[in-house]
Length: 266
Figure 1 (cartoon, rainbow, N blue to C red):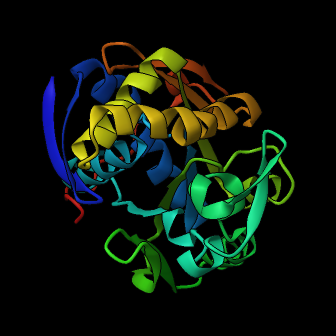
Figure 2 (tube, rainbow, N blue to C red; figure 1 turned 180 degrees about the vertical axis):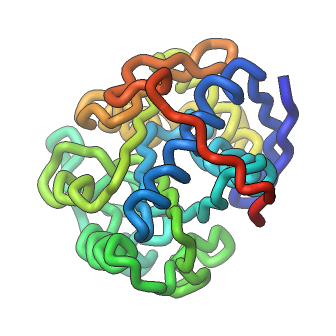
């Protein structure tokens, strides 16, 4: 196992990735991106969709490090959809329905309806067209997006988020702009435990964490699992935090080796 320590949204994360996953899934995947970019001669946009609690943000950052430190690979740039949360003043003044009851959107912040899907699609289109654009990130201090916090300039862009493959109005338009898609699934019991642990690490009591997860996070996780379409590469997060290959539409076994350029990018 390889250790990977990183701070994600103010929370220190200590992840471990198996050598088998690294050598047989992660690096072949990055080789695929490199080959696609070289063959197409344009920016490649990859979308990774996964429920909350699967460690998708950490995994994407690890893939970024691998791309920058593995010989022959092109570096990837990682961006997320969290910066497209609607502003807090919008969420506290607009309502939606949950289980037949009208509630303020802020009560279920993180659900699909609480994102600005139109702005997200507009920005994705520009990224897919190869334009260098500003990209918002979510500021957990202000509880609002920070506009144009980073610049999207890479040749291989990895966009991660919960609902990128959601088969619902508005969201189902997004996948057409991706050159490649990845989906991660997991058992609900495992997700519940991981989500509670994450909430406790953010400062909540165990009781507060359970209440929040049951009302919000777990509902969002079920939405992702039950209403997302299959991707080009489908992975499952196992009980032991390793990943299993569920379905690969293109087949890693058919991947040609990328010619060694004699350099390390990054």
